Length: 242
Image (spheres, rainbow, N blue to C red):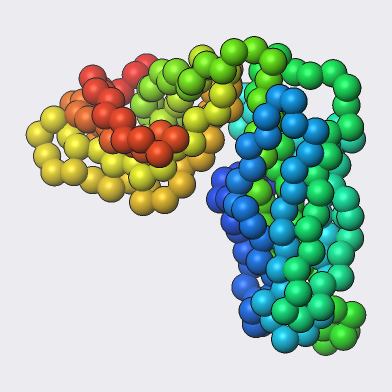
């Protein structure tokens, strides 16, 4: 069963840290991404209260898959957070352990999202103040298969709104993180499409994103520049695919 739209929106934004507006400094979560070895039973996150008042937080774990070029979050019991509900005094921090409960090991890399919500205090709720922090931390657990680096196929098409859609297929068994996307037309100047995180393509999956409102920009082909797992890649685009 898929989770609510509120939680899914955290994933669809594909930011490693996402937050709604807050009234003051408060919750911080580190690290912003976790990689867990195939024989490693657990790891964890540090939650720090940087504010002047106690805070409460909730930690939830979701299995992260991709279906029909979209991200899907599902509740899981194979990877759990302990403790799931936390109170942290001002200036203090709390370690949250993430534990693998399943005995069976997946052949391929498994992805999860750890959603950490700062909960409004009861007094704030009565006053109607519900501005809190939310973090979405990606976690990747290594599979039993030998690691295959992300191998990507790229395609740009036009949708019904005549916007440009970037489709990426990953035939490797590990994820690809895409960021800092730009395009240089065959005859024209470089155009920045996304200066931050574009998103992830999990192993043996496909994803797509609208990258420009004008598909015509790509009609004559050119060069697509994108940072994949921290390394710049240059891809030749021959034009719009059909």
